[in-house]
Image (cartoon, rainbow, N blue to C red):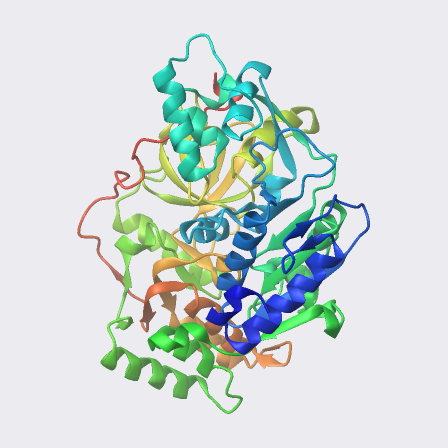
Length: 507
């Protein structure tokens, strides 16, 4: 039993043991603290599964910490250094920028699955700084960089372990030290994947090609990917490859949001009975509120969670009307969701630039203002490590009862965006916000429809996912109303000093 097991519950300690067995078979022995050179032999996958609050993130963080303590290097995809046969590595992954940022905010150095697929190509001179920061070389002398700048880079790296962030703190832009991006060709070593309920089969197969050893962390009560026929990839693993966490650890703090989420497991619970539970919780604890209308100010940073697309579009239209947004342009501060990148094959490098910076399908973005060229936008990518960029944009504003979206402005090609003031619960998986508004009339509609997914009423799965997106407060909105904003849209919360890496298309 590991020394840290004293802080674990029985089921967490058992999951730790199962993970330790998988890692030991890959030559990483946590018990004996022995590292063997990496083998190309596939070890396989283990799934650690449990509902919200069961301690999955605590276990992931503790395993990562112990691997680092015995000499396993944690790689983030921003720079990996020289390959060595005896070097063992760990990558901690999440399906979305927001999910990765949730882990980073808890002290876990996570990156996105998509980001690990691409590696940056560094200018050789600046790569010497990266090698020095990572302990693989001597302190360099770089023309144009003072000792004070190098000291700032060193201090930043000691705190954040980010090579691009450290170089930015020295006054460098991304275009100074990154000359391009390339698709990963060589496999990595050990991979931890959080929010693995979001993985589809193709993504899982891609990860298995890159990582001989995979440990998945997922919630079986969430919604399965649309193209997975209601089944999550970890459910296809043999039982001996699953470790189940039963105890709800965070409920020791008497969390009413988690109480409500876990109450949904009762097969006899009706929607009306559940809504009465929400109202009762709101009377007893300020962490749960009943809203008579949607709060428009919250929608700018925390989208309203809905089931139906028609509801999403109507709420977005109401949000823009409430703020007086013109039809032919966006207001700084309006939220967007990346819907993909429309670039021809010959512009593959530009696509890699955008995707590697976090602008992947589903990424949450805030519009900061127009770029220097028509069709370009200054953007803030929520949850990205270097969030600010400039990119050619195609923005689509959907309108109620109209098939075709209105396009206020567009570049000929680039990143496409939908408005992000409201999103479907399915799209919200993997994200969390301090305060979450759940649009209850939609869940009532799902309950009336009587739909079932994976043997459970769909409204219960939707409610579970929506509720567990709230970190601090849940607002259960009961009526089709939108409150008027008290202040105009603002971007000051996003404009703290940060490295601005502009893409080559606009330069």
